[in-house]
Length: 353
Ligand SMILES: NC(=O)c1ccc[n+]([C@@H]2O[C@H](COP(=O)([O-])OP(=O)(O)OC[C@H]3O[C@@H](n4cnc5c(N)ncnc54)[C@H](O)[C@@H]3O)[C@@H](O)[C@H]2O)c1
Image (cartoon, rainbow, N blue to C red; front, top):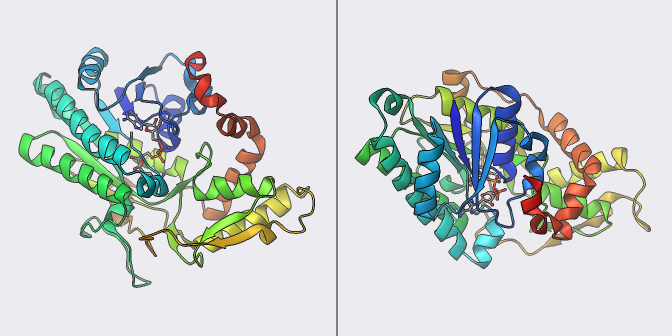
């Protein structure tokens, strides 16, 4: 199969690309604008593989989309390109409206034009897979409540509102124009190649440098964490096996309070990186509570029973095994982190692939 992946140089996109190239014979074309979050160094391991291709494209650029899609002639489009950081959406929402809403609309229009011109048999097997988040559901207040595929949308941040808009557009293009779509809403991911502005890599890297570990408010916010490679397997399964029009929630049944996640990281570092920066007795001493994020959702938790039952997917990592792998990855891949910190990952982009 030929699979076009938008946002394939990002955290989850690159995990999906590595999964497909390493586990299947499918051909992959990544299209990515390479914003600050796009990093070709996350794709180095598979970049020389003949199944892999890359093009730097903005999903808002209809002309480039049209020619690229027609040239590659994909069987599946997996759409991951997005602005994805909630804090950035609060500071400056415009890029979120532009990429997540206008970009998704532009991609839908380009895909629809391509799909309409396909022959009947390719039309019937083609899929547009939109990758979204559980944040579209807003937050949960009861401790036993879970998001199901039927939970009404109630987004809180500019990020989640822009993702909710894109989900509505995707479903409208299915209902109104017949575009064969599938949609997934996933909980918080963690794992290798995660950009260091996000909670888990930020804590690991700050701790190793002896910097404060900033925890929003009281740290009691609950997230349902999923190891990124488990998500990548689920996405491939949905893209290739799900029936048209279906939505799947994806999650790890793995609820953790933010403060507990930070404590686990500190404990793992005590064991795996016992030589601390000067003057620090325990990594936990670096924990600092800072003002809470405006509109901060309290609890997310996913009911993933539909994907378990329909497609037989289950996460393979526990939180303990996934966190251990993640911390070890950051300890062993200091140059990936250094190149982000000194900006050279952006300057050296063209030479990498
Ligand atoms: N990270 C999570 O925990 C999580 C959870 C559930 C769903 N999601 C969703 O999964 C998708 C991927 O998330 P991520 O964490 O890998 O994000 P990311 O920020 O790491 O990567 C996003 C990628 O999209 C690219 N991009 C941004 N704007 C673009 C544009 N206009 N045109 C083309 N490419 C563009 C970036 O360069 C980057 O490579 C997003 O749609 C996000 O909403 C993320």
